[in-house]
Image 1 (cartoon, rainbow, N blue to C red):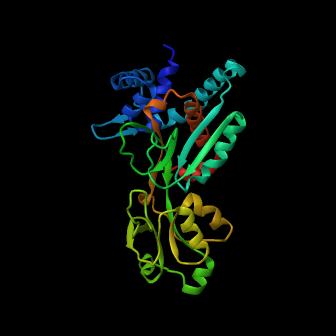
Image 2 (cartoon, rainbow, N blue to C red):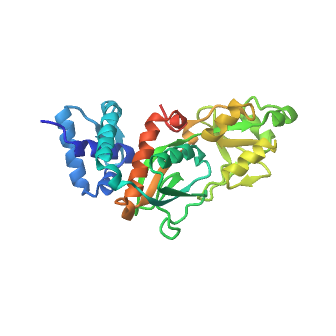
Length: 302
């Protein structure tokens, strides 16, 4: 029996959203329908793609391999559909997006999207606060941490991992901590998360959690970067923003990152927007880029 393309799409939605419920919302189908069709796909392939429990959903090794090997086929088919639709269906209009301040890595992807769709205007708003999408007229948002609003469709993009850094001048003037415990001897610039929590416990060197103090607290990542570059102290900083500065010598990594300290990155939009063609095309394009753009390797965990 030939594999149904719609079932393959559903499998990809489940993997990317990490939830049968969210995948059902994206596909506008009952959850039971999605579960039944994924089960039929597993029977057809004679492998278990997803390990289900009452509390979590896990992609098996076979499911991971099938997801990556089938993604190119699915993308090629979608591109073929777009090709035959021709210029009569050329996208145009405006898409309004809220991103957290560390999401500058997404900008080249947005530029490439506009190159393919030159009649689209992207209205980009940067904020680390969790703004209401409807009240602020956002089509979608890229956010950090757990998503508590069940009215939003949420799809996982990757992880924001953190690393402990300082400028070479700060290290020259204040010394370089050799052990995590020595961070207590330094001015540590702390970051206030969008939910109000101040990161005063830094997880470094594997599982070690170190309490830190300092005389500056910030709620915007660009401000944290500026303070680091002006030699004000030691910072706990996202690797996607720190790595270019480490590579060019502006910052120095003090301790390796600890994956346990990271936050998930989510692409979210209202359920009412799932049929919006601009949103659909942008979301599909973004997930294509996640697999092929080397810039996004810092968001992916091996």
